[in-house]
Image (tube, rainbow, N blue to C red; front, side, top):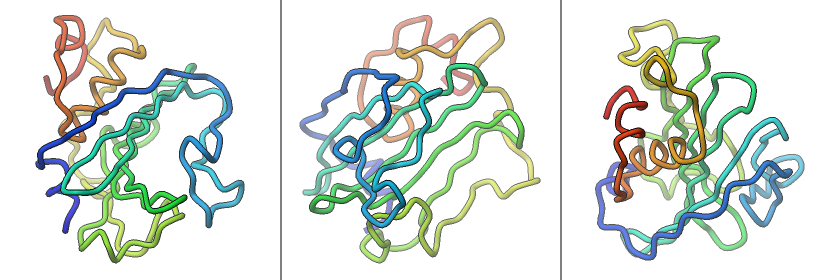
Length: 173
């Protein structure tokens, strides 16, 4: 199975977690082979962990954004026992290129749980090439929890009702 099957597949038991500025803990997003045993996010990031089921498996999505810099990250991972298998990361960093993804392009079962970047992870579009969306948000909008949730849910194919402010803020809506 590939990442696209999860994104396009029917979702069930969708649960959006609360937003936090606290230090991310291993129980929130475990990566057992990573130093600290948790996804690396500093206290300058606001984050939310949501969960859902698709194609007979359980997944979690971490939406996060930096509180001072125009940076965003959404991470899709499969729950594998007490660990997570990172399948895709969508990122925006003002310092390099705009919106891009890091994803495995092969069978997800070949990906090693517990690591942020596994063998076979590819950056799309490649660094230094054309990026369709070069701004975090449309002009006049600032990132907030509602917009960040909407972006992460959209990237992962999770259904939601967008309000007009979210639709106006996100470049591709």
